Length: 384
Ligand code: P1T
Image 1: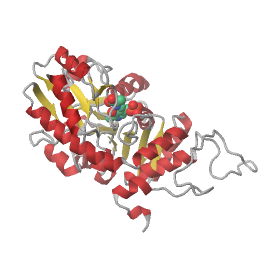
Image 2: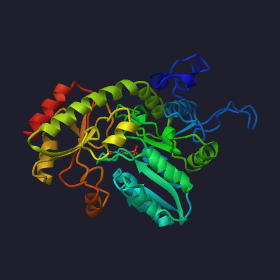
Image 3: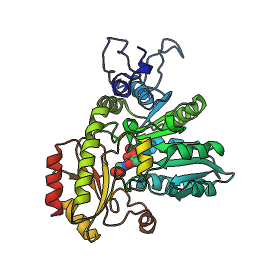
Image 4: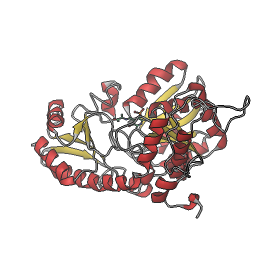
């Protein structure tokens, strides 16, 4: 059977992979080299310098393309450097419409790095297509969507935004970090670019910082490859190897993240000392129907506000947690807790972040794949 036809749970293991040519190694060797011998100028075996290409990175890039149902994958030094490459497709004066609730570092990249080069960013809630359309003008070139959003767990209708983007000839990029291709495959829903912080679920073990872009269009892939090579923020061979190894268990990890996420979300929702829980699996979540139709599950990311809704109450809980680790990042096998206002979203001005719901009392959980009883006991003792 051609590997292209494999189902998702097999693609994570085999997609785009073949035994190494030299000795048949089943996992690609970590080609820890910067350069490659040439027999005559230009006489190389497909690789000449590891910024331009490295066999271990190629193995990862082929896997990324396969699991996202794309033609081309590109692996970067971080999620933000992958985003940086997408924005570098634009020119001064071009405009971008982005979700208003997004990772703080993404917001910082847009506002504090690219605005000074004359690129204009609009941040809006993307539940209302008419509101998006209102922001479109002749300079608009790109729609940037994070779904589910970090940390408020809003879900954007990718098909609907894609129809709008196509109507106005705009590129549509989806940050698929929270969902992963196990839950949602944006290229199939009409997106042009899928982006990942592969640092998170794809790597899955909190041991690398890696970014990814996946596209179907050859011309777009060529432009992004040019930027990747010209700017140079590439994923190194060791990190490529680790990310590839992580991807091989993505489906089994995600299955457990989903199961544990659902149990924890319901536990928190029923807890008398919890005010509000944000998780798209709840039927009364405003985007539940979209989430249900475009995702194969609701994932292990949950945000919540303790009763009283104070900064102090939130800090007290995260300080008391013992199985959950208080740390930035998400998507690893171990459960993490974060305080977005002071950690991952601190670079967004308070007034801006509070508009999208990122208040000082908000706690974000990345539910890991431990025994869920231990996670519940830990939350129970911390909430008190
Ligand atoms: O950290 P890096 O690999 O550069 O990826 C940035 C990034 C992009 N998009 C989303 C949705 C993200 O969550 C991130 C990184 N986020 C965290 C570190 C965090 O704790 O939310």
